[in-house]
Length: 202
Ligand SMILES: [Zn+2]
Ligand SMILES: [Zn+2]
Image (cartoon, rainbow, N blue to C red; front, side, top):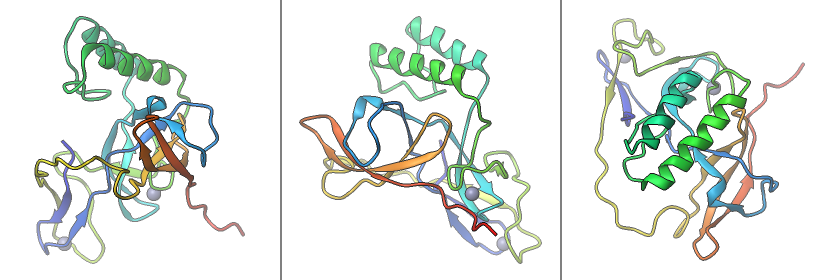
């Protein structure tokens, strides 16, 4: 469960946690063109503080290959798992496909886990018992997680009435674009190109 906000125990400064729904794109279509929904895999993430951006972010949560193999074995024997993705709401065939694909991705992944705001590695995880993090100009507080339970939602889903703007990454964690409109009849998403902000070079 990813918190909605972190609030300071001393001054009540409160920071919103960015959206935890981000996808790896495994297809070959160049972004800007519609992509298949079936080529999208939810990125395992943990909330983090990016020291380069000085903001809360999602960072990739990349555990050992052994953890991915164990998850695959568990799903193969009919169990549900929470990592590398929650499979409780999937049927077993879909869960097996997801976890197998993520295992293959894990075996070929080269880069260390990155912050999904800027692609950097200068971050610290927030979901630890007392995050060693102090926000600017506050000496006494520490940031505590706050959870807001979303109400049940019966709308048409993201990308139907307004652009979803869900971010897409390549398998090495590079920002490549975002999903905008969902086209149900083709099970495809319209996309726009995006990339990480780059530090201005001298
Ligand atoms: Zn404070
Ligand atoms: Zn960052």
